[in-house]
Every structure is written in C-alpha cells, then in structure tokens.
Image (cartoon, rainbow, N blue to C red; front, side, top):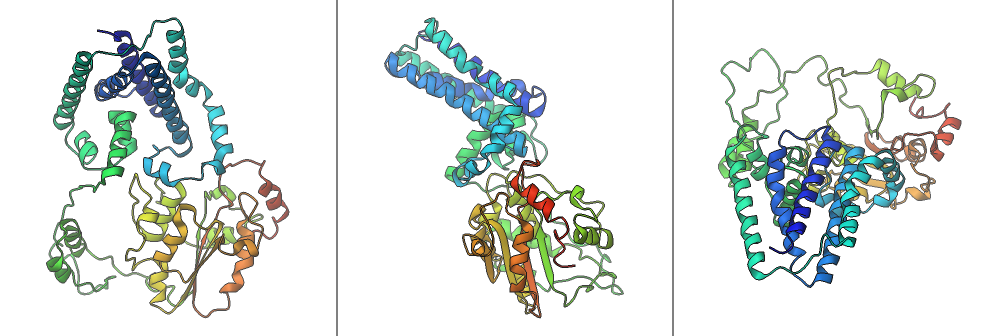
Length: 460
C-alpha cells in the first residue's frame, strides 16, 4: 500500500495530540486513553485519505495545512482552557468576535504555557523534517486503497459506537448520555477526547440539538404541607397547563414543578416590601476588595448585611455571561450556547424588571462596556428593563469609556441621578472594573488609588 508511512504518521500525530492535550489540561493521561484513541482513529485515517486523493504537490499542501490546523486548534483550546477552564464551543467561536480585546491576556497565557504550546506544534516541525528527507512522499493512492481506508474508517467508527452503547452506560454523565443525550464538552473531552467532543459540538450546532435528561416526578408526600404554617406559593393552574401542553418536555416540567413542596415563610418574609433595589453583578469581585478604608460601603454591606457561608458560584464556559444569567434568572446555563442570548424574545416573568414592573417600579440597567457585548442589549430588553445605558447607547457622552477596564465608580456617579429621586425604582448594574488582567499595570489601577477615599461610597 502506498503512503503507509503517511498513514502511520497521521495516526501517531492525532493520538499524540489527544493524549498530550489530556495531560496538559486534566493533569494526566485519561483513564479512557484506549477509548480516546479508538474514537480518534477515524479522524486520523480520514485526514490520511484527504491527503492522498490528489496529485503529490496538492497532497503536500493539504498535509501542511491540516497538520498546522490541528496543532493550532489544540493549542487554542489549551490556552482557552487555561483562561476559562472550559472547552471553547463553535457557537462561541462564531458569535464571539471580541478576541482582540483580550489579546494581552492571550499572549500572557501563551507565555505561561509556552512549553505545552511547543509540544503541541512539534508534529508540524517533524512534518517539515520528514518531508524534506523524503520519508513522507504524499503520493496519490489508488481507488482500491482509498476504498479500503474508507471501509476501515466505517468499521472502527462502528466499533467505537458499540463501545459507547455498551460500556459505562449508567448515570447522567455516562458515556452514552454524553454522546447522545447531553451536551457537556469538558466531560466529553475528558472521556472521549477533544476531537470527538468538538465533532459532537459542531454537529449539534449545524443540525440542532435538544438535550434529553430524565426528570423524576414525585408527588408531594401526604401531610407535607401543614395548615398551621404559611408558605410561599404562586397561584399557577398547573392542571390546565398540563392538560393543554403537547410538548412532552414542557409537560413533564409542569408536572415536576406542580409537585414541589413550597418553602415556608419565616421572619425574613416581606422584610424588604416596598423598598427600592439596586443590583450589582460585580465582575470578578473577591473579598480581598472589601476593606473598610478602601471600599467602606461594600464593607458596611458585608459586615452588617446577610452573609451566605454555604454558597458557591459554579464555573461555566461563557464566563461573565453565564454568571449574569444565573444571577438574573436563578437558572443553570446550558453549555455550548450563550444562554444569555438564547432567552431573547422568551417570556421571563420572574426577571427582576418584570417582577418589579408589576409592583409599579421603574427599571434602569447600566453597563460600562460595549452595549452589544454578549448581545446584552437584546437580553436586557427581554428581561423587561425600561432603559439600558452602556457604551454605544449614550454612556460615552457622560464618562470616558475609552479606558480599559472602564470605571465602575464613574458609571455609578454619572447615572445615579437617573433614578435616585424616583419613588419606586429598580436599578441593575453590570460592572467591569474587576475584569482581568489582575495586575497593577492597568491604567485604572492608578486612577483607583487616587479615588480611594470616594470609591463605592456613593450610596453611603
């Protein structure tokens, strides 16, 4: 068979990249290494087929492009993971568009992981050497050879599918569920390899994908609700909703929620009735920033307000957007998409703005960065806010928005008069001062030092 050396090269190359990525990202070669190799084998043979279909010169060009492309993708995933601890999805690649704003962070992270990046690109260097020494010739294969390789791809792929359907099939995060029913790229990468996880992600983006997670519906136990106690209950006619629903998933959700035991009212119920509300989604806020001499108002809120000791924030791939989504909706975001954007034009009756609007409140929202970032302008409109002021919708006329990261203090200072004299108001601030990089080299750092005496004291 012609190009046998080339076939061996591609198999070793793809396997090497998979196992190296697993080691660099997860700390060791996955216990599923043999499975990862099996699932990546069709990809390796597929590239070998692609690089043996044409005349020699064309095959060489395709080989160089393919090798560099694979190395680049693996390297990009490594750097992205080192920044966000997540696998970047094709959805984010297509809808991102702001990579240049974080080029400094990316370059710094490459510098910190230069050894890993170098190891990832070693096969490309090796390809140049093997081609120059004529060990790899990239000659065109015969039709029979191509046919044999295609059959091999099919057989190996079927073997992989059989394994998926017969090994580790129990549990929500079983290999079978990861492959067919749920979208969790990080876990899928660890279990089945980066190439398989990315292939599934691309397939689901192109053809659409609805997760299938079994919801266990249990009835409320007898005597669970006691007559002598008061409960937090929203009057919803679930029976009518269930009877008129044709979508089985939504129907199951109605059944699930209708059988939940409501929470009991306590001494805190109604404590803030009639009060105004200012919500801060504090970008990357850490308790190290809460000091009585530097941030007196935050310190007062921290020391005199509610402290939730048994609270943690999950880490999700879309970073700020997923955190904002959880804050606003109390829902878990979906991986592989931007949940903050997917709710566009949906009914959101329990968003801050919609809840407060029913109580007669005005609602203003602000962000001291680009208005359209993460499609936040469309998202906040769906959430029901009466106004949204950010860079691009008028905030730049009130403050200097060319500084990165923009000042939270200035944003508050130039917007407080919009609502502070209203009888009933809800205000939503999406901040940005705390955004990475976390160094003293930023222009804002010096500015913050000068403003220490007044930082975040505006509502004191």
